[in-house]
Image (cartoon, rainbow, N blue to C red; front, side):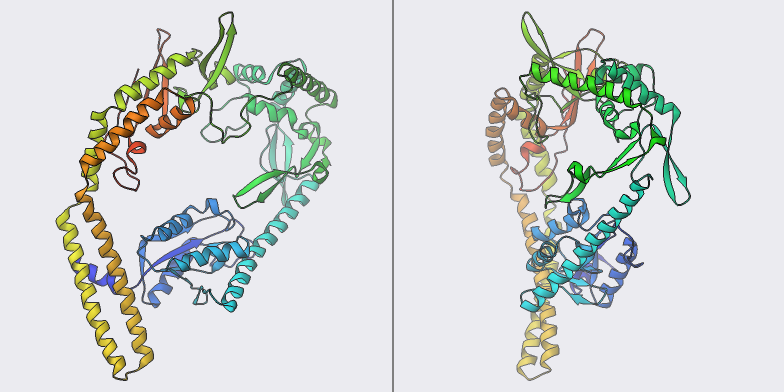
Length: 566
């Protein structure tokens, strides 16, 4: 079959997308709902029976994700974005039932399906062959109740799961993951914690050092120098002790033989699930003397020194707690979070005070918080010099007209498609649209002559839908064809103005400069300490953040990269 025959075959069958999801909560579900692959197979078979052709590039699946965790349903979101943009080639979405799409509260789930329908895409459930409907009292009430029943199922499963976990915790069994200092051992039908003597010795040492007045950073460095066992590092983080891993050890009541469970509870306030701290009256506390590692006397001594250190800190700061109160707030320093050491750790801002005043610098987090065993780079990177060198490279090497104009030329070359190929495709689609118009005219005459009204109207609606799809394809090809007529001179002129503006903003305020640097950088700047006690930095820069929206209102990347170094 040649290419033209393939194009002709696609236009006569309505195009359909498939969505499938499997939840992490598997109890009580049937075999079909437990397998994403099986859902896709059944949806494809259903679509074929209806005479629909499945768009293979629009088969969406989210595996092992709850229907209430909408932020984690990335495939579902891609489908919704495609529908909302109006560029989706399909007009039907096939799924098992409404619970596969969402298990949020009834009004939210029903509203999401309604927005799909209002965008002109039909939702069909292959489990019973029904279609999502809305707009009347009956369909709205039924749709809402079905969505609410799916949400209630999720709530009941969550409640039974929480009750089962509480029963485990109350019996002293493991109700979570592994805790440093213990081994999880399966005994019969449950899991128990047994003390790990080698790790327990490290826990005792942490409490002893804290009772003697050592700070959390000093404890971490001492343990790393002794190559002591440490908790398993989180993904992408280096192994070893850090102040952030010492702190929870000093506050975990399990080490004194007391199981505390239920301090937090998962809530979803509409922005996604998050852990909310519970009132102490709702905690579950169980005595577990067999799990005691730290005596009451050592626990009390360590926490007495922690309270003294906290009181001393607050007196020195006038009762204020320094630091950023929320992660969403920008750093006050240009390279915080944008630069890293060759060991993989981020650079953090620090300062020293002398007779000449306060001087700020960057230092490797690995060396500063974990010690020489994590990183041997203790060289301080003075902030004024580092910020100036980076901004100079960006201003004088990257943000100059010749570089930007070269990127524009590359971008236009990538975006300008072959005109002859587009014209051929457009002519083919227009030819088929004209033939469908002829068929519609014949159907109108048949209706006027008194033919079978129901079947003729159904056939006419089908032809009209096919014609609309073809016209959408023609409009898309026309848009691509217009790319060949880009006003390159106007684009370059606009970019010169923007580059001039950015060059001026780089040296004014740190928050503005950080935003510009973040748009230009791909990844992070890597600083390498040299033998002459100076730093060399390198990073990959893309002008996509600057050019995006100027050439075309869509995301793209130029082919050239610029790698500054100093």
